[in-house]
Image 1 (cartoon, protein in one colour):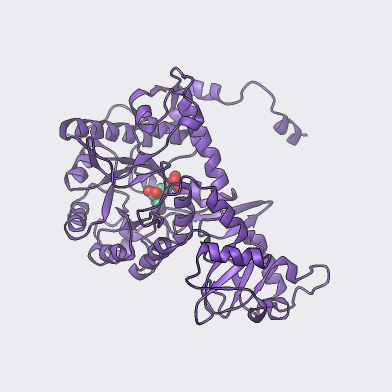
Image 2 (tube, protein in one colour):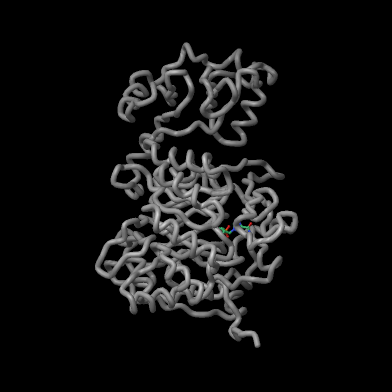
Amino acid sequence: MAFYYMEPSRTFSEFLLVPNLTTKECTPGNVSLRTPIVKFGAGEKPSVSLNIPFASAVMQAVSDDVMAVALARCGGISFIFGSQSIEDQAAMVRKVKGYKAGFVVSRSNLTPSHSLKDVLELKERTGHSTVAITHDGSPQGKLLGIVTSRDYRISRDALTKQVSEFMTPFESLFYGTSGITLSEANDLIWEHKLNCLPIVDKEQKLDYLVFRKDYDAHKENPYELLDENKSYIVGAGINTKDYMERVPALAEAGVDVVVIDSSDGFSEWQRETIQYVKANTNVKIGAGNVVDREGFLYLVESGADFIKVGIGGGSICITREQKGIGRGQASALIEVAAARDDYYRETGIYVPICSDGGIVHDYHITLSLAMGADFVMMGRYFARFDESPTRKLKVGTNFVKEFWGEGSNRARNWQRYDTGGKESLVFEEGVDSYVPYAGGLQENLDRTIHKIKSTMCNCGSTSIEELHRTARITLVSATSIVEGGAHDVILKDSSLSGE
Ligand code: RVP
């Protein structure tokens, strides 16, 4: 007879935190969000920790090298998507590891034969007013000029005017050469009163842009997540098929942590992958996803450094509808956290867990930490920002960004879901969608972090470890959820829109 869990499985929105005593020391400024992401023994220090408990999802629409740099700069980690060739993924990792703070890969690029209309459309889409003009319109093509809003007048110039007619050509540009330090680049910026300094190699190919404002921002980032060589820490997603080629290539590129990216990680394929990585490389490896004690223990005993929790809760995920597997994210997390604590008591080894998917409100992050997560992985949250790799579009009167699941036809990341069988029989487990555009990563992250720290003060905790031990959490009834929103009032906005 089948085994039945008779309690319904629950989601974050069905719980609330009950405040503990807030002492005078408990202020947001005193709260530390530093958290381990790889296993460690009692009394030891983990070899990799995060300064904020945030990881960006292993997804094409979320985690490329640009996101990885932006998030590491704020103290978190990106896992660069694995649904691309080994060479391309390793190149992204290499870019993050070789990235020098203040040097950015140009995201707005056109060719000389584009028109003013193209420039304006690109500016509208990306919000960038500096456009690099390269021979092929790629971010690292031969640099032929730069266009900024000082180069054209919308009132006078025809929209059909070619970029080559109004760009500032390479010959008239101040530029730095590859290998220049940030402080030398900054001296040039100040000396020549520039907003942006292109950095080119010997063949005039564009390497980076250095912006005046980025240098200032760099100085304001106390949480930057750096390794001992002062490079940003970065993760990457792998699969259970080509790991013997992929992991050594990623290791060679300098990756710090890999994670097996799968919707269901309770498998012998994952055990073999973990064992291979442990035996042949020094790379730390996370595994998952699991939703129960058995899955957790299986992967931990296989050697995993951290475990990812969650099946079917992702915003773009339709695994539960398609296959009928999964578990409410809160229930999964609560059970796995208990297994992690038991394992620690029995062995003295602490294995961090990551709650993956299903975060809708900022308070869900605090709740998941209170329920025992060491960090959270999010897709939708990060997809909304300038730094995500997808297009920003205007739909109706709103700006949106594209966001698609790894199991959608668009990503075609079938390895993530593969349990053997014919390629022709694959079916989608994810959708292609839009998310509301929300601006830059840092300002959004700052607000979310402030909310988390404030709530932790309500709970009387100045660290995640303390929150794990002392949080008090209550299940809420359907009617108390209604009570938690604005109710029994006429909202001004809606009364106006009804007129
Ligand atoms: P969310 O933060 O709710 O957007 O969820 C992101 C998570 O969803 C990912 O980290 C991954 O575990 C899962 N995912 C990604 N693609 C798909 C899919 O196509 N079903 N699911």
